[in-house]
Amino acid sequence: MTDSRSRLDAVRARIAHWPFSTVLVANRGEIAVRILRTVQALGLKGAVVYHAADRNTPAVHMADAAIEITGPTPVAAYLDGAQIIAAAHACKAGAIHPGYGFLSENGDFCAAVEAAGIRFVGPTPAQIELMGDKVRARNFVAQAGFPVAPSAIEDDDPNTFVERARRLGAPLLIKPSAGGGGKGMRIVRDLALLEAEIARARSEGQRYFGDGRLYVERYVERPRHIEVQVLGDGQGNVVHVFERECSVQRRFQKIVEESPSPALTAAQRRDICETAAGIARAIGYRNAGTVEFIFGQNGEFYFLEMNTRLQVEHPVTEAITGLDLVLEQLCVAAGEPLPYRQSDLHTRGHAIEFRLYAEDPARGYTPTTGPVLVWQPAQGEGIRMDAGIVQGGEVTANFDPMLAKLIVHGTDRANAIAKADRALRETVLLGCKTNIAFLRRLIAHPAFVAGDVHTGFLDAHPEIAAEPPLAADTLERLLAVASLSTRPMRDLADAIPDMHAAMGGWRN
Image 1: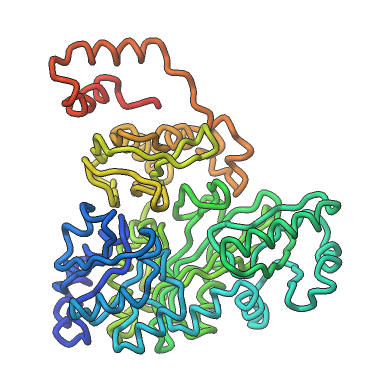
Image 2 (image 1 turned 30 degrees about the vertical axis):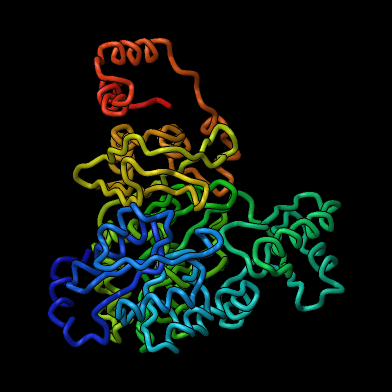
């Protein structure tokens, strides 16, 4: 495990020689707060763009400069690269950090940033384009000698695509070539339905990504989703920063991530991590990235995709290694070589991240909205909360429903799960329905405790999402505490934490 404080001090001593002194964060929410925290800790100035819908968010308040951007929708504003580059010039930012989502994996935006004389805190435009096209990425990885799942690619011969897919045998997984985030993916177990499912996947790919091209690969039953963090400086130095298990998902989107993976032996961990580093090395990778794999029950693993950006779940890696991945990204963007050899990097303990969503798991994980009446995140040793919300704010349907991330670090997996249960129990987030109680039920499930998870885990255990009825004694306690309050209804929010404590944490 590295000493993050001494690393920060060493970098701070060289800041005067960097080609930029202000970093513009082209993002919002918790990731904007997290990036600004490291930027300002280094002694740099941190700026942020914001849409009017985010005017009163933590990132805007903590930034040294905040530049409003506009658009027909809030999301459209954050996707307007020209406006963001103009904002960077306005605040004299010499670097732009895209965070994740939005323009973080847009090669044209990266090229435009660099053409404007601004450092892009991320990979090169060519690397983004290569790995952003799932078919090109897959072909590159296969040609470099790394494992990929048996597949049929539509572009190779559209006329024989269906037949070539059929010859792979069921089950199959259909994917959009330009896909991401699980959108447009379909599992086919009955080959009689193959053509109909291909048509649906093509329609979804066109709708989500403006690109209906597809490919099909052999689906690995009960697969685990394991990814490896990599760092490269674009000067020939690449290291892996160990793996993360991301198998607990809903609709192909992650909910819980942890490291180390409970599934891997030491030899398997070495193989999958070295494979990820080899892929990054093959493209001369620059900055932080993540190589993702499907891991089968018999130990085989296949390349899935590479995300050329900082991941939502990067704090898991930071917790077990002591690294500050945003600091490392900034150092690379400033032109510094990586100071680490692979043998310098080690892990300690076990970390788990939980995504706190404004959604109702019992109703198909439907997003919810409402005011943030009370927000009291858990605190304590080994507990970290990355959040982009503030008490008195509003959860709207404008953006992704993720509100915050709880990261726990323990001496081992059992200790981390125990800390997570306490932290989830002590976290108060009221005003809209969230998945906090669902997460408590999840980590108490015997299969999760045993580490027996896979990407279909939640579908196999629908009882975790089902909301149990409120017990009579819990209702009685809630009403009893409420009856003791002499405060007017407009101040009821102030009494809610007292109710929460009296009940020993919310059950629902």
